[in-house]
Length: 178
Image (cartoon, rainbow, N blue to C red):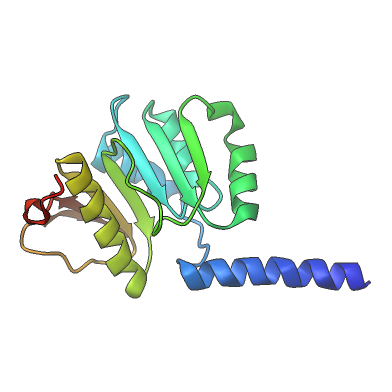
């Protein structure tokens, strides 16, 4: 009985800690993902989508079906394992990293960043997208699921599509990093 209680406490602490560091695990509706990818993003094989807080891998799976590359950052080890299992058929198009997105170095080439977040996490997501665009020296598209971002005048809201807000985030050349 003690083992069950300890295991339950460990699972609770891991999910609680990851919700404290990042957004809590909230599955994205399957129909919303498909509509976004089909109607708004129009991904192709040259696109690389970064899902910040990739959870169970649902977004990564749909991205992989388009032929685009998908990269997931997830801090919860249980969700990393679950999504790796779920996405084993798409291994050539999907990479899942057990990492904290806020402390990871920018990727080499990302065309779209997908994220769910609220409050302080939105600010971090925006900063991550700006850092990525600056690192690459070109704009990235940022999809915010469910929440509108405060952006600078250099960036722009491309479209509101149902629960999604699609932005173009431009590099910050004033930082001298691009």
